[in-house]
Figure 1 (cartoon, rainbow, N blue to C red):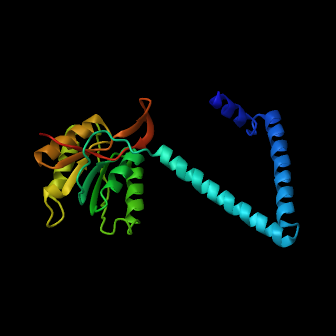
Figure 2: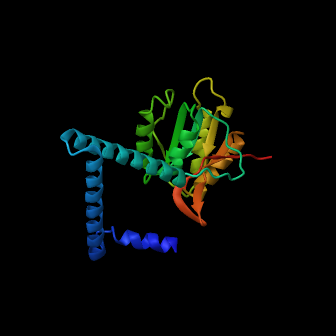
Figure 3: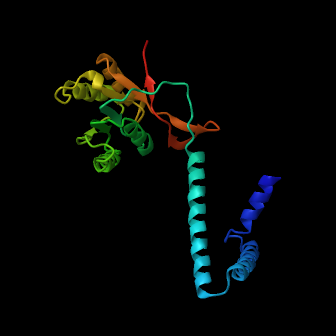
Amino acid sequence: MRNNFAQTAKIFFNPETLIPFFIGSIFLSVLGNAITQILGNLFGNTTKAALGIILGSILILIFSVWLVTKSLTKVRSPEIDLGKLPPDQHKGLILLVSREEPCRKAIEYHFSLEHCWLICSSQTLDLAKKLKQDFSKLKQDFPKLTIPEPIIINDIYDPLEFYQEVRKIYKYLPQGWMVEDVIADFTGMTAQASVGMVIASLLEQSSLQYTPAELKDGKPTGRSLKPIKIAFK
């Protein structure tokens, strides 16, 4: 009953439904005039009182918008416990670039990140460049982060090409680094990409992570959860 009332009320304030919207607009105008008259009687009809009422109304509006925004943020970004362990913090991340949301989630998780290798295709090259540009500007959050030019894969259905590129990254790590300093996220691109990256990382005995999609009623919401650790016993 309450949901039906809320849905019907929305119709009266939707410009696409002309007659109900017209009635709703008149109602709001009458209500606004009545409230203005009441406030005028309480605080007086001087210019100073009118300015005070306007200022107070603006502050109430700003506070209301802030409160609603905060509430919506809590609703849209729930902390969901999958019963999985999060990965340890690493200063190196190898990332398959496919969708922007999981890529950003994977990078932002490692707050001590110093180096991020982006593996992409010609179709996702623009996104890889955007990620490189955006995170290179966040010196306050990632003061030591270096993102080299994206590594472009010619055949996204060839797991061996991904395997070779990932092995090459481990072979030419920054000076003083060890394999344990790097973690690989195999979330994006094709299944062949994930296979190639996982095999290369296992041979190097490197860490792996996966950034799962958020689901609601069994369907993806378009957002991602925090990365989870992939451990082999």
